[in-house]
Image (cartoon, rainbow, N blue to C red; front, side, top):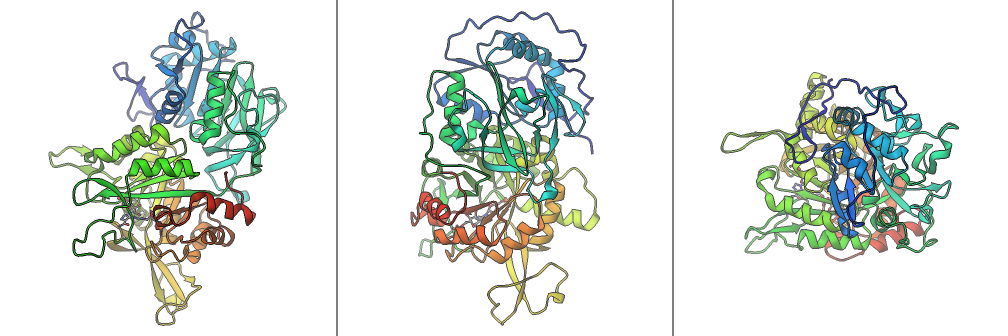
Length: 579
Ligand code: 1PR
């Protein structure tokens, strides 16, 4: 399968326009013998409040922009290599795939400018891929040469030892030396989302300022003089992340959180607030919540249940300690999402003030509008990413893709799942499954995977399979959740959001049978969803299944239990969470 890359377009407002072209292997390493262009390095003449941002147009750097602006700084975008050399401080939030990023950097001459800038010990902060690119090479679609400033190779996490890949979530840091911007952060969790990582060795030990434990101990951050880079996302790590960014931008500033409040030691279980969003009958976008997917009030008016305004509620849940916020555009399957500008606005406004990951789902598929204009699912997803989403969630379209894949055994490379994960990485692609329980007397009655259920069916059935649905639960499909989960993992999903229509809105607890079935079947993270009604339901799902996160809606919208109470309960039960 050919990997797309990002091609330079001088006319683009960012450095690049997105288009599929074959990759040639990047040619340059800073340790190689390519001659450096004759750039002069000088301190910026611009004021102290200006931060130079290297955005090569490959994905979502909106969150980084938002965080920098939130901290009171202005952004100057890099247009030419000389802009890098003129920066007084440079932030490089690498996104997308390693090879594609190196291709762009070398085509535009940014690679040499970056090397010169860093070698001169100018203030630099690389984020995620912005750290990995400093190494000699990466195994991602490679080997592919990197900038070569730090000895070592970037490799993929090993999922064979039971650790889920991608590594998604809030993990603890082990600070190994005076890290400047990370002082006191060792007690806290920070947000990671990646499948590749750089490993410590004798050759790069002098660079390492912190490590993280996830199956193996990988490099979480580096520091040499004024040069910093972090594998995690400070712009998505809540208050702690904002403090890290603030310290880089203004080294005299202090940590906002007091050290020692909490002891982070490993990957935390996540608690996610979910907002099902749709237009009500007056046309206003509202957060709603159904019982088994029926979101209308049982009144004469039969109106859509209105539980609040999406931006306000998302902001509230962020303040309350949600580890992520998900928006599901629940009528996206019938209303084209790019026509749904209010939803894009919701994302834009939310991402200005919410510094934890945002997922958005609903309507991600290929689409031809009434004028005959064709939009690919990749375009739809790109618009969501540009508007502030960190991850997109695909429901119905993933079901069709999995059915086709299971029927033919062929990965066409053309499904929305494959296209979006190829460009944005599988960590950015969630598949939302909406199954309904189907009881059977005997597992041999169906050719799909069944489970022995904890509670017998209406006619005393001991087994059930979980039938996938599309179009907001309206149509059952001939595929089970187990078969779907395994297929979408192969097609490029990075995470599964596992709903259950039977439990949705019931407040009686998660469907532990289903969540155990799926979280044991795949090696990507699984988010348990549907049915939370009390803090004990969260500890139950984490104790009895391998879910990485638990998502709830009604319990939070109806203000029955605050997010903090859920987390305090989990801590009391010995389950590590981010506080
Ligand atoms: O098919 O790609 O357009 O995506 C549509 C998305 O919208 C899917 O992710 C699907 O789950 C969601 N959706 C569609 N219709 C509804 C509905 O409720 N009528 N919402 C719907 C599903 C599920 C959860 C819910 C949890 C927790 N909502 O997100 O919030 O089950 O609820 P609870 O804690 O109150 O029990 P596509």
